[in-house]
Length: 186
Image (cartoon, rainbow, N blue to C red; front, side):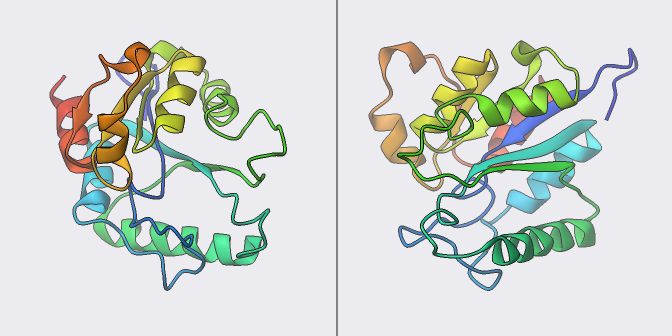
């Protein structure tokens, strides 16, 4: 959505561990895609506050053969359907399908997914909050020049305990709902 000045207010979310439950065995199907309590409502609130919400997600399960693009699309259809029922939407989902050893520029902690969204919406990266639960999410945001935000859901508590000096000033919230409320109040 655009502000009164015509600028888009973009927020980028990681998926697993931020919007939905994460799994050490990978979320492999729409049946396994389970939203975290309050996460969908938080996206709806961000939408209502004028934010364009996008998702940037590593999905190496594709490269590892744990699921295929059809299964991934079904997960995203489920997320969008559940959001639509509440009056919310995710404008775009950018996915890195590569494995960790493929050397791509889109797999977080590389900034490729974030850069792609920033270019698509023609916004300055420093105006874009990026909400994640892992160090790679925060690093990708920092490398893109965006604003990293950590949530304690998913891998967030472990990430918080091991934050490097360069990311110690990162805002930290209990979950996506708390991070969304802080953005909306700001």
